[in-house]
View 1 (cartoon, helix red, strand yellow):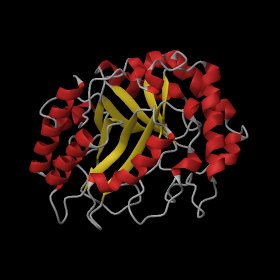
View 2 (tube, rainbow, N blue to C red):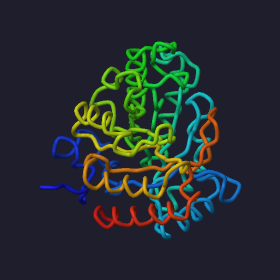
View 3 (tube, rainbow, N blue to C red):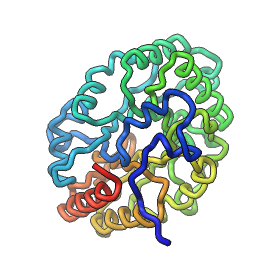
View 4 (cartoon, one colour):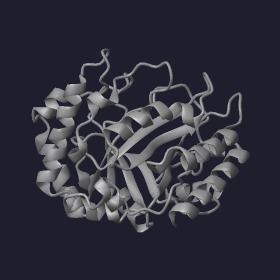
Length: 325
């Protein structure tokens, strides 16, 4: 019998019941399906969430006016700015009835130093202030760690090993647990490994069920070669659902070029795949910006094609009709 995305309580996803600990309360405040974008400057000259008009423009152009429930943005390292430095964007998202998906990274710091306690003072401060703020948000720590392009990467070309990553992740997570920051929902996010690519095996980077709340994948169709959503994500999805069968998954970054083929058709295929094949995915965040840092410019925004905007709007409308508001 064909399965579809259904209304779920995220607090009941793990092990058929409530996860241990008060973090389950934060999880249960999330909507059944998380959807939104990292929204760039192309609408208003400013990025979301600092410029909320960019969110309104994205919703009007690509979602038929429906309101997104997650806004993706980055906060640098734990030691560059304390948590309270980010209260303005965090509160702006919260007041709009949405949730933040926040990237926090170690940048060029060796993961062994993180694990050995070199940054503990900043980590404890960040965790304590996050607890004091008290509202749920998703924290994506050192994303795409299975690739070579980030300084915290874990391929042979990087300074860090998979064991270094796991030890550092657990150390940082333990500090937040000790601070009682159960409103922080941990998102473990490798890059999807497309066919014929070699990256670090995600299994060697998995910190363990007790150390995360969501699994995650990033993936882009750059058109060389043209790669469908299914082909892009299927291999890694199978592996991660074997590693963490009871964890909900979110697509943390996804986009497609429109060069050479139809972006609208690609988006329709994405929503079809979510409906019929990728049943553990309960969140989708589009990378609605031009290009990527240190990459050649690419036409990632949905609205570079009117047909793509219409396809995304129709797809998300159908998804929300199945999963709830």
